[in-house]
Length: 154
Image (cartoon, rainbow, N blue to C red; front, top):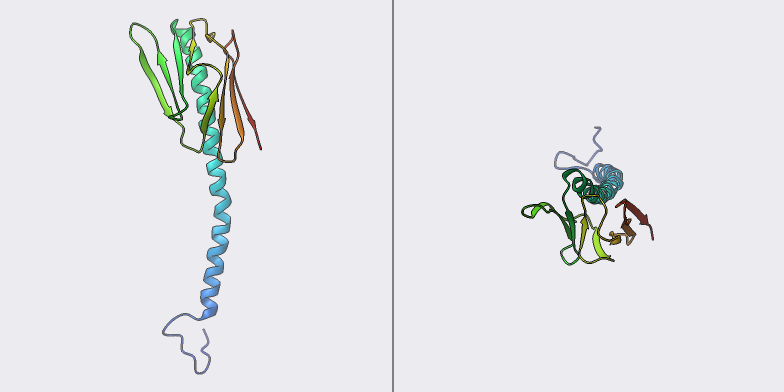
């Protein structure tokens, strides 16, 4: 670097050098922020798909094992539980939603039981929401126990 007469750079950086470094940091951060948002959105979708798969698992396990399985919904704890009924009740899975997913309501009592035929004891819809305020519904159809997931963006 060529020295300007009367200015010595052996004691620090020039204002121009500092501005260039700050500009580079700003560019790097502006690139990384959108990717962080997409990671959070993917975590949310993964959590919803896991919930749907767990309901399907309970239905299919009831058929295969010829026993009752129950899905318990805990709105106040923002969680759900899957229980196998047999000689003694066994908790298969406890899950608490973590990625800004919140259970709002369901239109059945706090539990939904799948019989050995795979049919739920009642049909119902579980309503959830996310950080953006999207309305998320997981519907379980009567007789077949089919599980549908729908997301309605605001």
